[in-house]
Structure formats: C-alpha cells, structure tokens
Length: 265
Figure: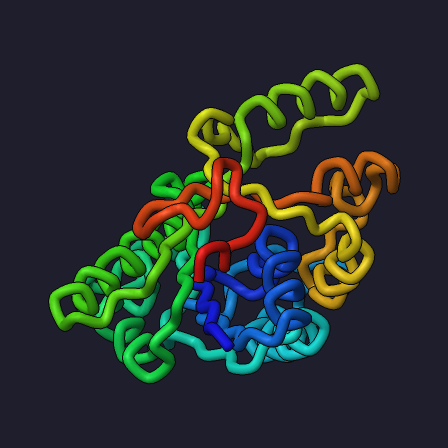
C-alpha cells in the first residue's frame, strides 16, 4: 500500500479537481490523506441564508468537507489551521490570521509535520499560479514545495510530486463552446497549462458521478447558476472525466502520458 497526500486550500477544492484520483487510489487500496489549509470562512454562500450562515460558515464548510471525504475515500483529513484569505485585493488578504499572510516557513513546517507522520509516496497540490490565481491556492503551492524541501534535506522525500493542471487547449475549447451556447465565462479566469507540459492523464470517467456527488455535498458553495450546476451531463463528463497532472519531482513510471499517479511505484 502506498500513500497519496493532497494539499488543498479550501473545502470543496479537493472534489472537483482531484476527486477522481482520490477515489481511484482508495479503490486500489492506497491510503489517502487530505490536508486543507483553511476552512473557507470567506467563501461565497449559496443555498443558505447569508446573515445566519456567515458567522458559522467555517463550521458549515467543515461538515461539508467531512461528508465529501466519505465519498472520496479519505483516510485522514487535517487542517493547517489558517483562516481563509479571500480573493486578491480584499480585506481578508491583510488579516494576519490568513493563510496568505502566514510566514512561508511556518506554513511549510506545519505541513512537513504531517508529511513526516504519513511518509507519503505521492504528493499533489496546485501549479504555481494556483490554477486561477487565488492567494490561498498560490500559498498552498509554495508551502508544499517548502515542506518537500525540508523533507528532502531530511532524507524523507516522496517518490513523486505532482501539480494538478488544466490543459490550456481545453480551456480555449471550453470558452469557444461556452460562447456558442451563450454561457457567461464568469469572474474566474483559468489560463491553463500548455498540453505539452502535461505528463500524466488519469482516466476517471467511471467516477464522474461520484465526483459530482462529492462536489454536490459542498452545498454552501454550489452556485445554482454556475457552469458546474448547469452544464449538460455530456459536457461535464468530457470536462471532468480525466484529471491532468505535471510531474514536478520524481521519475515517470511509464511512457508519457502516465495513466496513474502510482505508475512505477
């Protein structure tokens, strides 16, 4: 049995981006560890009353995450203990309790402490741009790299370190298709990673329904008007039926593109 450890910024990030590999790892008998940096206190609120939910949003999202981890097959979930930073330029970014404001060395050490306990074989987090530039996603990337640097110096590196990636060509095709269908692009813009840099493509098409259920239990974050909720099932399956990664450290286990994060282990 190998151990997969994933580092995410907020509850719900794990389900839609890496839910497939988490469920696949669990089904194959591997240990799955999820580290979440914050409890998502500053996230938008949907399907609930804003006034009564905002003061307890951290509690709400923690419970939603617990339900999601049951679907995803997570063996251990830990929070790093930081506050949600909110989007760039907001007051949350200046809160000294926020993940964004946390000293990088401190955040890296908190994460490294969990890694020392788990000794993961495979570690996953975001690309350096945090996928779409959210300060907490960017910090998760840098904190993970910092933690791995600590483990490297201690002689305890994982065999593989991956960055979850969205192919740029897929995003361009999606924008073109969305324009044809009259779908608004929304405020979040994802540039994506050139397809030539993708090293690993995991087919999770058989897990799409479960992946969608895991995202669905994050009720407070499910905007009923978002593309996640409104896109046709066929389009959803095409978009989320595979997960793409860039191997940042370690050796490929098979010819590119690898078909599993555990190839070669």
